[in-house]
Length: 203
Figure 1 (cartoon, rainbow, N blue to C red):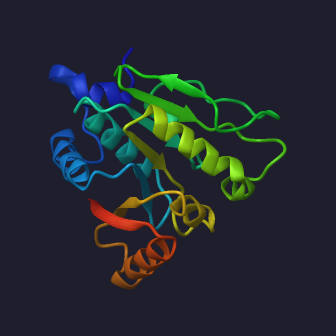
Figure 2 (figure 1 turned 60 degrees about the horizontal axis):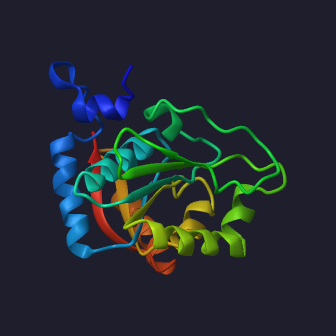
C-alpha cells in the first residue's frame, strides 16, 4: 500500500490530489530553487493538517530535481508527517529528539520524525545549542533542509524555529486569514531573520 504522498506523485489513474496540485508544487519548488535557500520552513497562521502535507509535497518536488532533501517534523505537539508517509511515529524517550531519520520511497528524500522528549519541552529543544548543531550537521549531508513547522498562532515555537531558517513558505487560508494577521505573521518571521519566499493559498 502506497503512502498518501506516493499516491499523489506516482498514483497513476487513481492519483490522489494534495492540498496543492503536484504540478503546481513543482512550479513552486523551481521558484524555491532559483532563490537557492539552504534551510526552509513551511508554517501557517492557524493550525491545520495542510502544513505537513504542503511541506511533504514541496520536499518531494525538490527531491525530484536531484537534490538531497531532509524533511524535518518540527510540530511536536501535532505531528503529521508520519501519517503522510505511512511511518510509525516514534515514542517518547530520554534520547535526543532530533536524530530519528528515515528513508522514503524517493532515494533523495529523508524524513526526520522528531520524538517527544521526556526531559525537554519542545520550546527547550529549539532554544538548545544542540538545535543549531543539528542544523549545521544536516547541511553537510543535504542540499535542502525543510521544516514542517507549527503554526505561528500556536506559541513561540515557530518563531524559534524561524531563527534557525533562512526562508519560509507561508500557508494562507483563502477568505479566512485576514490581511492584518498575514502582516503580523510576516513581521514575526522577518524579526526572526526568516524571509517569506512564497505563499501557498489553501481553499
